[in-house]
Length: 294
Image (cartoon, rainbow, N blue to C red; front, side, top):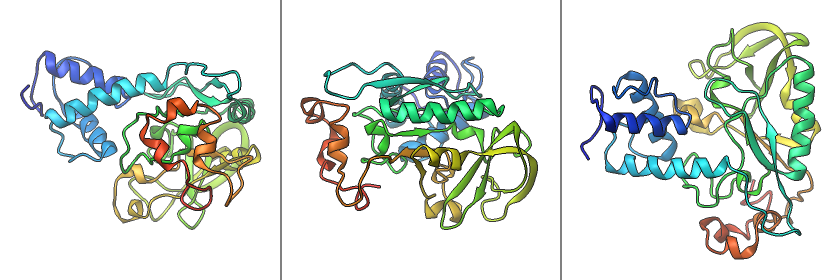
C-alpha cells in the first residue's frame, strides 16, 4: 500500500479512520479524507506504540494499527472462564464521555471495590469515565505499556485519558499536584464540596491554574477501597509525551504484601498456567511486589 498522509483520500483512508475509531483515537468523520484530526490521531497512536511519530501511515504503522485493534476488541469482550478455581472477571459500568468506554472488566474483588467508588461518585452527581482496564496477554509492550502492568492481573483501571488535564472549565476531572510526581484527582460533582484547586493541564505542567467549583476527592475515595495511584514519568515534566502524566491510572493493591506477593501468583488467580506459558508476560512471573513489580 502507498503511505497515507495529510491530503490522502480514498477507501484506504476510510479503513484507517475506522481502525483509529476502534482504538478510540478520534480521527474525525469516517469520510476517506486524511485531514488534521486524522493526522493527530495517527500521531497519538504512534506515540502510544513507541513508533516514530511523523503522522504518516506506512507499513509498520499500518500493521501495528491492525494488531492493536484486534487486541483492543479482545480486551473489551467477556474473558472466557478457564476454571472454577479462578477468580472471575466482572463487567462494571462506566460513564460514556467522548471516546471513552461505557464498561470494562476487572477481577471480581477489584470490581466490587470499584463499584463502591462508582456509587459514591454517582450519588454526588459526578462521572467515572474509562479508557479500559483488562489488558490482553498478547498486548504490545512499549514505553506506554509496562510488561508487568496491574492491568494484566485485573487489578487496574484507567479513567478516560481525555477527561482531565485539558479544559478546566468543563473536564469531569480536575488534577492537582500532590508532590513527588503524584496527582490528586477531583471529580466534578454538583453535590460535592466547594473547593479552590490549582489545576495542572497538559499545556501547563508546572504551574497550576485556579479552578473553583464543587468536587469530590476521587483519589481519597479510591484509596478508601484499596486503590492506589502511580507517579507520573519524569519526562512528562520536561516536555515529554502527555502519556507520561498517568493521572488516570488506579490500581487495586488490597491483599498484596510488599516483598512477598509476586506478579506470577496474581496472574494465576485469573488465568491457568497453561494459558500463561505461551505469553510474553509470564517471563516476569517472579517479580516481587514493591521491588521490580509496582
